[in-house]
Image (cartoon, rainbow, N blue to C red; front, top):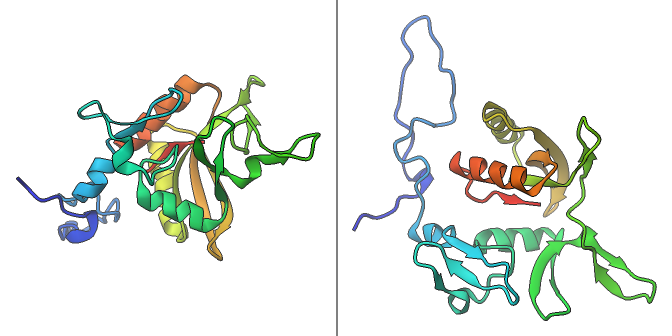
Length: 210
């Protein structure tokens, strides 16, 4: 059985353009080990939450219910590292629904009802806009959060090459200014799902809808 190699384990092969030419890209896309990951990461990216009540965590490779094996994961996350990073950033928080289910949501989805109780908005995350037809664009695909502008620009360029609309916002995470790169907005669930699949196939396995 082969051993999965982290993406950064080996440098990209050294390629020198012939005289009179210059490299078209410098992001390591010709690295033969690009996109490989640790076995633990591969297992987590094969997980998916059901839409049942209560939700169950399913291994898509086998169809097995593995909720008890990943009991620290909270919907909608299927990756421990990303879940930890987002919670540490302070913009997301764990809440418990009336049905007793735990979820991780953006703090700005919390509000107060007429009785003074803290409630969770049923609306999608913010950053809504309207498309040319006037239809409300209801969702985005969050592709990545970057502390370096150059990395954010590369992702924006890649998304545009894929034919996707792109939005970029700047926020603070752990005291650092970062750029959040989003694909979207999309006006319906089908368009959002298709975009998510496209983004993940392009190598952004941590992408998620919002």
